Image (cartoon, rainbow, N blue to C red; front, side, top):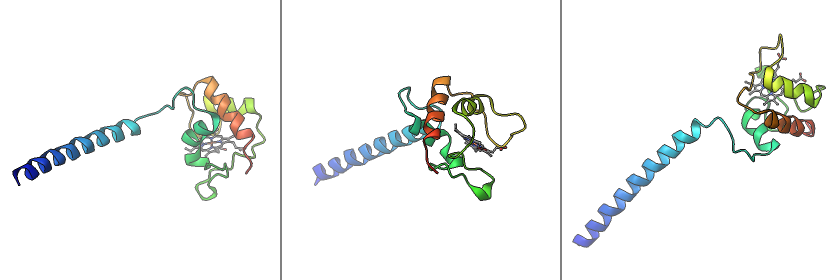
Length: 115
Ligand code: HEC
C-alpha cells in the first residue's frame, strides 16, 4: 500500500511538472512574432494575414476587410504594401518584422490564391 501511495505521489508530481512545462510553452508560443526562416508563403500568409483576410483571401466583409486574393495589385505592390503600408490606407498594419524575402513569399502565394 505504501508503495502505491509513493507511486501516486511521484505520479502527481510528474503531472505538475508536465503542466508547468506546458504552460511555459504556451506563453512562449504566444509571444512568438516570427515563424522559422524556412516557412513557406502559405505558412507566412496564414500566420500574418489570414487573421484578417482569412485563409482563402476572401476578407471579412462585415469587418470592412476586403478580399485580397483577387487584388489587382502586382506582386511588387503587395510587397510594398506589406513592408511600408500605403498612404491613405490606414486599415492594414505595416509588417516591419517581416524580411523582404518573406514579403515576396507572401505576395507570391497571394497572387496564386484563388478566391
Ligand atoms: C489587421 C487586419 C489586417 C491584416 C492582419 C492584414 N490586412 Fe490586408 N487589409 C486590411 C484592410 C482593412 C485593408 C483595406 C485597406 C484600405 O483599403 O484602406 C487591407 C487591404 C489589403 C490588400 C489590398 C486589397 C485590394 O485589392 O484592395 C492587400 C493586397 C492586402 N491587404 C494584403 C495583405 C497581406 C499580404 C497581409 C499579411 C502580410 C495582410 N493584408 C494583413 C486588413 C488587414
